[in-house]
Amino acid sequence: MVVSSMTQLSQEAASESEPGAVKLRICMPTARDFARRTYQCSLYEAQDVLLEGHDVDLIRLEPRWGFRFHYDWQKRLAYHDISKTLASWNPGLRKVSLAEYYDVFVAVCQGPSDLLYMNAIKGWQDRCQTSICWLDELWAVDVPLLKQWMPALRRFEHVFVGCRGTVAPLSEALGKKCHWMPGGTDTFRFSPYPNPPARVIDVYSIGRRLEGIHRALYGAALRKEIFYSYDTCPEIADLQPYDHRQHREFLANMVKRSRYFLVAPGKVTRASETRGQIEVSYRYFEGASAGAVMLGQVPECDAYGELFPWPDAVVPIKTDGSDTMDVIGSLNSDRDRLSAMSRRNAAESFLRHDWIWRWKEIFRGAGLRPTAAMRARERRLRELASIALQTT
Image 1 (cartoon, rainbow, N blue to C red):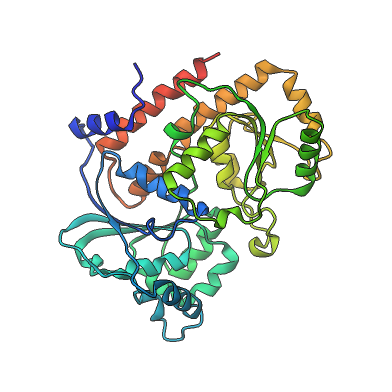
Image 2 (cartoon, one colour):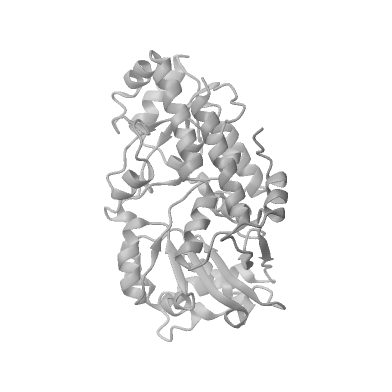
């Protein structure tokens, strides 16, 4: 019988002793108690996956009075600080002293300004044998603007960045090799398997949208041809949810109940910010993990081919929306193909895009062997991938 419960998985991992597996003491700070925008929730989910079955001290950072003013002031001025010291100041968080020694210090940062949070932890470099910084969003065009941030980033022995096109310029700026680390999901949360729910939503769209496609779908919804679910407010990514786990659970439940899910490259409507750099956004991982049929644009970058090498991972539609309803109509007429696409997306995500595969790669890049908890989760992922492919 397949065990998908994370509690059971943690217990199994804790009781196992496998050849080649190691037990690591991990120190991982988090700003989840005060920095909790919707766009940050996926990385907190990644932290939660590492917490399962691992010996992790999650350091919950706490703001002091006036933190927001100090943080915003320091973040702005750090880009122009000729002394290159502001990026190493504590931005108004309560100081933390580590009482123990650790094998690895892990800093998960949404962007460069999150490096400021690490300054609240006194002497972490002396207490941790090695250190990892996972810097999720940094565009290549912004690397030359980070000269004042480089001393803070050089404190880490291993640096991973979420944008593939940023790896080379950041490596050159830092003077050492950086590594690419794409997004992912907690596939146990996002996948419809082993008990798939009914897909009662025809098309689901979240985040930035292309207006031509939206108009086509909105018109079809007005004509009562489809059930189309979409955001009604701009910049919803900057809202603050009550709880990051509830937010991810809600998103997962919506996507795995949707037949079609809209996807587009990262910051698709912000060309002035990306300057032509094309990256695979989180929407692709979320849609595939939930077994939705993804409609949208196939990113014209090598990263997409490496991450989604199977057929029909994304069904292309024109950005002006002119063929959107025709494509949907054609797909609806071939239910066998729809089912196969859904099952393949979910199965491949179990095997490629669960957060544990990202952590395993991060540990490998840092010269650390996989843990028993990682291997236990991998087995569950493979079992559920098999179920997804066999389900009719």
